[in-house]
Every structure is written in structure tokens, then in C-alpha cells.
Length: 208
Length: 208
DNA sequence: CCATCGGGTAGCCGATCGGATGATGCCGGC
DNA sequence: GCCGGCATCATCCGATCGGCTACCCGATGG
Image (tube, rainbow over all chains, first blue to last red; front, side, top):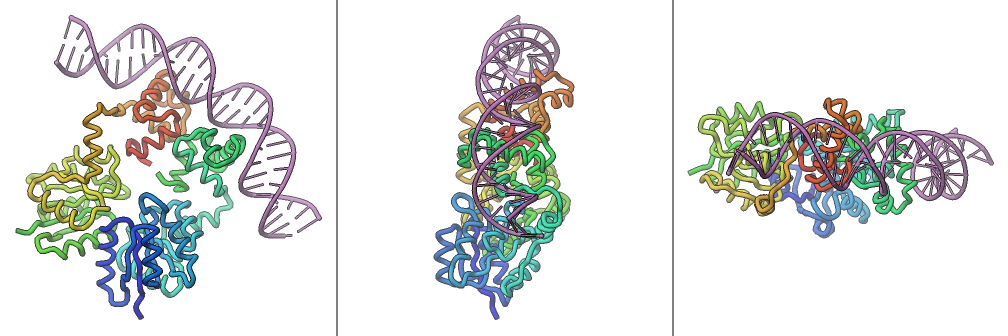
């Protein structure tokens, strides 16, 4: 029984590379490739694959999480296995929330990747060890967990926005932003904006 | 005349993928692969390739620029063609400064990549269009470069320290710290501490 | 020899931040 | 049905920051 795959990645080298790798197996087959949301939509509709290998960072435009969500909204949706470079808490949660069946990192050896694809096709959930660790830490920790809204603030904060600008960006008042910031400071154990950015990056809550 | 290649990339998928792609040509040959400085050193010494395809982001440890510099310091060094995902000004300059002969992006189509490798083997300098544009833009304008002292401030800033604390840490007065910060803001084109941290990380001036 | 640059210092002042306190509405679990 | 967490908003106020101007010193270099 052959597993039919579609690759979604904005890098031709990675697509061609994965394709070449997979062609070396006898039970996996690449039936389509896409570089963005639009092509992914049509390719998946046309080929109806078992599994979609999804990169999260698609350059400009909608990210892999958005593409995943859209594919999962189809009738008889394909399973989506995320295959990406980074694994921040926010990335992982967004992808899984969008309906991904698994999360592997591009630094995984080929055999693990193949095993992950087969497992995904069988309906299993596969997670890279570090991703699993992040999720466990998050689930098991009685400690402070930043909320979705707080992550949003952190991301804007890392872009150097002031309270007023963040408020405008999030369609809330400055008071609300300050409230979120206070909670963030408490949860991360810091007391300045720059410190919060550092801690958030350190704990991989946000990227770069 | 075959061009002998060594791949340096921390992603097995990319290595295997490039390898598979290149095996489809009749004048390029992969004679070795490495995922970090140590393996790169020994593989290059053992195989003496014509061209090294170098990823800049090698995960933990020394980056691709450092590896490039070390390889270029050998007797009869191989030419190094950088093949990476991002192209910040700092990345480009560091790589070229380390002795890279070219800078291509991973989103380049395979034929362009092959052409780039052949050109590099011939001793030509190949640059991705966007990279060339960045260099031209920079050459045309006197680019601001952060000084050593300013980097020190940035590093402390990324740890969330206040002016007073940074002053104490650097054995200078608060006024001096503020002076450095002002210069940093001007050079990076920002006007807040969080923004400076973001810009500094973005341009790879400081690490994580 | 003097201009330039990196580095260090100072004071002033308006803008912003950070902390404290308190309040409302909504939702989900017990 | 009550309680807690999340998100929202509001005020107040001291601490800090950011921009500005101006000065000194040593090294570097046309």
C-alpha cells in the first residue's frame, strides 16, 4: 500500500530534495508539490494525497499553519505532517491547533522522516523528541503559561512597538496592553520589556 | 571535467536532497558531507573538493561563516559557495569576509544552483540577485556599523538590564550608556530598547 | 597638524513605562 | 450557581527612558 504525498515548501531545493529522497523508498510516492497557499489548494484538490508534508515558513504570504487549517477544512482532508526548521512553543501550538497530525524537524535523519510519514498515514501522531518535550513541559508545568493574547503582545514587543502602537495593532486600549505586559512580566520573572523579549526568545515562546 | 563537492549543512534532509539533485547531473559530484565544523574540517581535508556548499545556520556551535574562514585558511583552500535561507546584511558581509566566493539562496531553482556551482568552480563570483542588490545598496551609502562597545551594550540590553545596571556592568556612567544607546538607535534605525534588541537579533549582531 | 572617530561624561525635560489597585464581562469547571 | 482565569478598561504616580546639546580625551590618519 503506497502512501501518496504532497510537499508544501517554498524552497525548490528542499522540495526537489525531499522528492528525490522519497523516490528511494518503495512505499512512499510524491504526487504533487506546492510553494504557497494557492498552489497547495489546487494541488491537494487535484491529487487527494494521504499525507501533506508542510513547511511552516513559506516566505511571504500565509504561513504553513494557515495552509494547514485550510486543507483540514476540506471534505476528507489529508493528514498534515509539519516538517520545518524551528519549534517555538507558538509555532507548535499554532500548527497543532490548525489540525496538523505531527511535527517533525528538518534536522531529522531520513529514516525517521520516512517512519514519521508512514505513522502519519496510519493515523498516528508523530512528534520530534524536542517538540514532545516542549509539549510535556508545557502540560506538566504547574508554572506560568503565557496565554495566546500575551504571545501576541510579546511578538509585537519583539518588533519594538510601544504600548500605544501595540494597542492600535491589537484593537484594544493601552490599559489592556499594559495589563498583558504586567502579567507577562510576572510569568516570565522579568521587569522590563527588553528582558521579556529575551526571556521569550530563550524559552522559545517567540522566534528570533 | 567533474566538479567535486562537499556539502556542509546541519539538516540531513537538505544534505540528502542536494546530494540526490546533484547526482542527476553528469559534471557535478558530491564527494563528502558534513554537519558541523569538526566534520567539515576532516571531510574537506580527506576529500580536497573543488567547491564547498555551505549553509550558514548550522544550529548550535560555530556558524557557517566560521567554518568558511577556517576552510579558507587551509593550504590550497576549496572555494566556498554559501547556500542558505536568509540574507541579512550581516550574514552576507560575514560570509564574504570569511572568504566565500558566492552567496546563493535556498529558494533558487535547481538549474541556477548548478550554474552557480560551475561558475564558482571556474573561479567566478556568483551572487543571488537579492544579495547583489543588498551589496550595491550598501556600497552606495556609507553604512552604519555598530562598534564593539555598542555591541556590549546590546548584549546587556538583550538581557533586559536597565541603564543603571548596564552602567555598573560596564564600569561606566549612566550617561555613557545612554550615549551608546542613542548611537545604536540611530545606526539601527529604531527608537526603543525592544526595537534595538529585535533589530540586533535580526541582523545577527547579537546571538539569541 | 588638525580632522575624524570611538569612547566617556553631564544636565535637562517631556514622553513613556512599570506597578499598584480596582472593576466589568465572559466562559468553563466543580 | 459560584469561583477562577482570561481579557478588557481606567486612574494614579514615581521611575525610567529617549532626545538634545555640549564638552573632554586618546588614537588614527590624511
